[in-house]
Amino acid sequence: MTLLDGFMVGGGIVAAGFMLQLSAGPVNWDALTWPANAIMLAVFIATIIAIYMIGRKYVVLHFLGTYKAAVPAMIYAIILTLIMGLTKQTTDGTWFNNMLSFWPMVLTYVYITVILGVIIINHILHFKWRRDIPFLLNHLGLFIALIAATIGNADMQRLRMITTVGEPEWRALTVNNEIMELPIAIELNKFIMETYDDGSPKRFASNINIYTQNGKNFATTVDVNKPVKVDGYKIYQYGYDTNMGPNSQVSIFELVRDPWLPVVYTGIFMMIAGAVGLFFIGARRRRKS
Image (cartoon, rainbow, N blue to C red; front, side, top):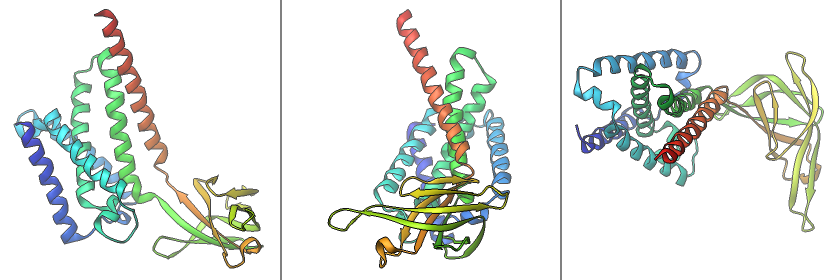
């Protein structure tokens, strides 16, 4: 198979994604929360292993472990990622406004992950220490980062909590405006606002008490872009009662929880380590030559 075949296969996957988008709507990540995503991951890895084993007999599957499949897949992924970067991403709107739930993008990244998996298995089975350690770190890191970012999307929580002075609040609103009770509570002590000479806000923050179900209670201050971390949540200052301004008795916080983020960071650090290793191997070869 040729590079042109790779573009045709990649284009077919994008086309299949458009058909799924039209027939089934966007990807429903809510159906893939833990433990469903862990089960799906196990099935996905088993499928990649099966593709590699069967691919030794069939040209079509063997093709997945070559640059002729990888290069076109990366080009399609770059184009879709650029679209995501150039359009405002919201939970509603057009297809291009919610790219993380856009079937062509999801399937393209799944396809890239399959290609990575086949390449990684091949190098593990034909392992050579000096050559393959940086290569495996780089590719395995990308594989882990892509997997964790994709299946972890279902477990990420982005909540909004409205608090008033002197009243601990355990409830927050989801992106669908559903009420959700949390294992942590926030009590607003005082809203803080500093202004410029013309009266426009220079800084706004909140002095709060945080209570947890495990008894880890403390006072802190949350500033804009300076979140407080507690029990897996990042608490951001989001808003206040704009009608009251500096005298606001209300603070609005955004709480973000992403349990798969450490796994994504692990993959990224592995990629960096692999890139550094490849650089030193290349430098050593240049000195010898």
